[in-house]
Length: 461
Image (cartoon, rainbow, N blue to C red; front, side, top):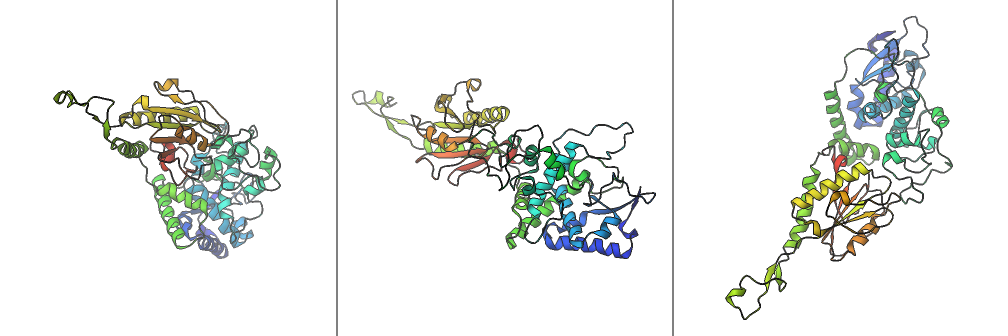
């Protein structure tokens, strides 16, 4: 196998390559800098015969941003298809699909050579990543080539992540068409209000055979991190360079979105995740609770419940004393099927620690577990004694209503949830509501204050 530079190709093929890059940059100008960062490597068989284990139909990439070119493919396909695959491969690299690969590593080969053919898990991840990417690339201006994967062709909803498509295509899973897979943070209990309607005609879950029919061409180690036999050993873009390129591309996406309204929503979400600065969610939550506590403790008033310190000066008169109320907090915990015990345990410990540090006494803290219904109100004395009941559907509105009905009435309600729940149109009157969102893809109501917790806060724990 020989590796050549693009300049070693005939003039007409060099022009086709340049035209494909220009076409791609014109269709998605916000990805232009990433397209220019691709380092083309021409792959030719040493004996001139085609190798069936080498699949370069989709101009695959590796993790160092090399893009591999088969001269025969370059000569055979239209310029628009070249441009499409370049946009597609850049998307795999920018979204770090190789690092996100959730499957087991490929089995070791006796000769220690790179993988010649993909395993079933690598094919499944390739399909999942393609579905995530092509959902954004499939616009009115940019049609998918024949054989390209799209969620509708898999019988699955659009706008999912690669991990969600991966779970839905699991041959051993129990996901249904149109329902968020359990591994992606969605419940699978019957009657869950968060289930997404299946596309028309999707009457069953995709089987492994369905995925096999949609595997399409190999996108290379830039998609799954597994080396291929055609990978070169030449230097390429470093990890630091890739991160800087991602931030530059994210800024271009935001700028393009402000100027024009045709930026795909998936790319806008990706840019927000890249550019949004990491925040200390504990500090943010403490600030929200502190403001709520200040509202309560500021309500100092006279009370006859305790004798006044001035009572000795006028023994014949009963004087009131000044009383500063302590804030009462109700904690509503989402215990639906999408919330893991480890996630809930860590969040509960952290949040109650924040509350104690701000002077919220345990006797003034109530905990309500909630899935599709609210369970018994629990007074917190020991975190280990909290019962996290539930595991079905989700309706945090029911939990908020239950918290608002607790007596004495709470001054603040904190909701811990992944956000995949319906919300009421208005808050309970006179009560501040803070939502601790544990999945940035979830939703929160406009009338609530939102704090991203844990991994949702951008990786800062």
